[in-house]
Image (tube, rainbow, N blue to C red; front, side):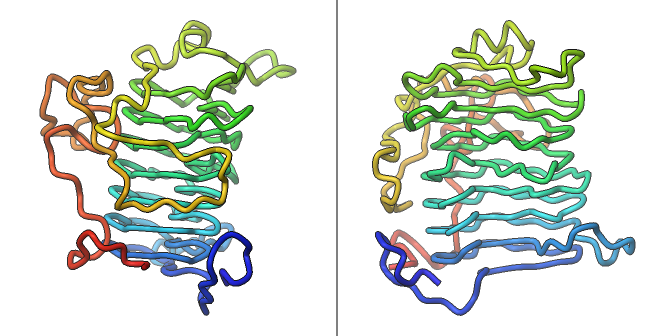
Length: 312
């Protein structure tokens, strides 16, 4: 694996996954993973077992540092209930960032994760019709251009910043049921794209279910969603340069990236209060994205790793 793949150096490995688990009660925390097909995954076997002791539930995945995945950084695929994926960092993936393909009912929580450079535009993979999803306070440098149907999915206080990928919108929602909501998120649309926001929800008119919107204001007026959402730019950060869409195979390094918000930017104090999720915010309201202004950044990977990249 990772041998003779063109623009990347060879990293031959004997394992397809770095970490893979099944069953209940796992904690996967503070690992450093590089050059695997998938970094961390729940094993997926189709329809879950009837016995609760053999179901993938009550699993925490947090504090992991991931670099160069051929498919996804974290796959919660096949999980059932009480799945939490939080405070992880992923840089460079070919297919997807954080996957729920599927979640059988949920709840599954994805919160305060960082993501940079997923060339496919799949920040959160939502294939196989997952249900019971909650996305809070994630910072995504890239698009969420995913048409996979979801049920009971809710989005709050996230940041999605497009890198000007030609012809690709910044955010798609595909709702299979009437249980959904999206608000208090920040979006940086891509330049010169007509369909920035795509929306699908149950409707009496089944012939044209997808609706396309050029601006966030158009989406707000037509759907009632994102009433408190806002458009933002890369100037919300202290310093952040997006991946180059013309260099799909470029390799970026987490140590060179600064995801911290700039004081006074329009992502600061712009979020909704979510009890037990963002308690202890520092300003008038929670900030958007993974990192609260004035609070220390979480440590990603093993505690003994400091500034030096673990994969070099």
